[in-house]
Image 1 (tube, helix red, strand yellow):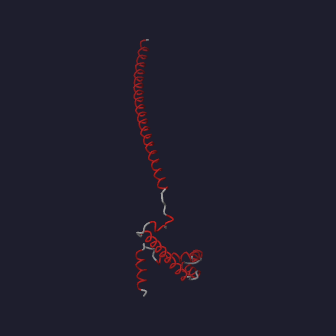
Image 2 (tube, one colour; image 1 turned 60 degrees about the vertical axis):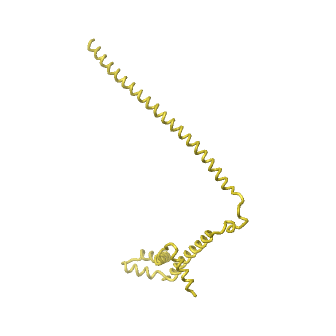
Image 3 (spheres, helix red, strand yellow; image 1 turned 180 degrees about the horizontal axis):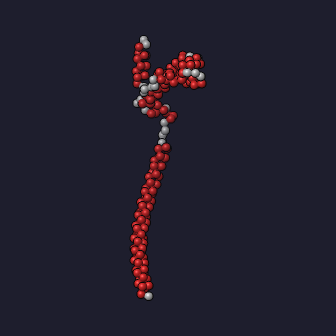
Amino acid sequence: MLKPYIKNIISFYRAQPKAPNFLLVYALIWLALHNQFFVTFISASGGVNNKLNAAIASIEHQYLLSLLLTVLFFALRLSYLYFVGKANEIADEGEPIEDKLGRDQVFTENKDVMRLLTLLDETKAKLAIANKKETELMEDKLAAIQKSRVLQSELDEVKADLAIMTQQYLTLKEKLTRSA
């Protein structure tokens, strides 16, 4: 009589994603409930053995409460996963959407989709304008770079001419000072 029920529970539990180890969850809950153990262990005086004995004596041995909270944790987890699975099964059934929602919730026209399409068209137009502006700016940038290069080459030529003229001036001045 219980065999099909237990079989369903076991197959459901095996189909779920891996849960933390039962003993690990139990240990974490036990540690959270018995923080006095650590406080006493650290604050007690004496050797490790004395500290351990004092820490064990300070807790009230509420192992049953830790076990109950651990079982409750796993029961709540399995219940949540069970109800999520059932909700997904109901949502994935092949019924028409009208049957799932009810006749009063079915919409005759979808204004949100229309607004979304209008927004998409506006965004496309803005993107085209932005691309055009970007292309123009790139052309302006390339023209400015080209103009800068031309001006730089002219400046280099003027500097070279000035250096030659300065050199000739110095040689002429030197010749004049020697002849005078």
